[in-house]
Length: 172
Image 1: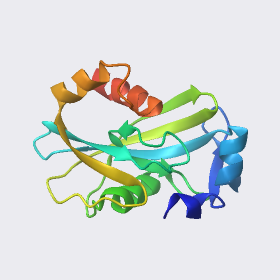
Image 2: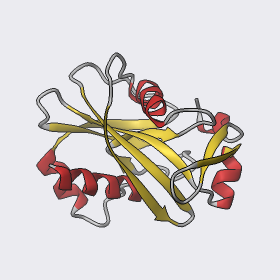
Image 3: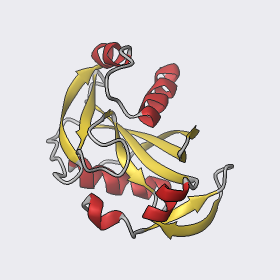
Image 4: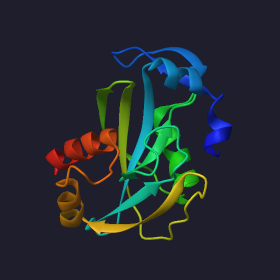
């Protein structure tokens, strides 16, 4: 779904504790900085040595043109966060036929962004097919390469993705 097609889509609205309380159009959620959730997936190579990092297109509604190691998106109204993660993984990177392993849920508040990140992980050695309307490009990085890049505060990496990656790294 292109960015312009998603603005009126109904998304789940959460309270600050992570409970679904409403559904509102995506553009209202963004404009009002409402609590919402993301189904996010870290894609690792089958051997676990590499992580797939992509660059967002320049017309994304939040953090355009920045890099991220989490495929994912906003949880739609009535959607389970894991189902969202599976859907977004297929849409954004063309990865299908895998079952994401739930990692953690993180409450992230970076005004105006306020979200509950439902983080998952998959192992994948198959082809990556970018959704042109959302992904400008991408490639595999070793864990050391990604950690090094994230050490540069000027590298354009999505802030919520940085928080999620830091949490994931502590689990390793």
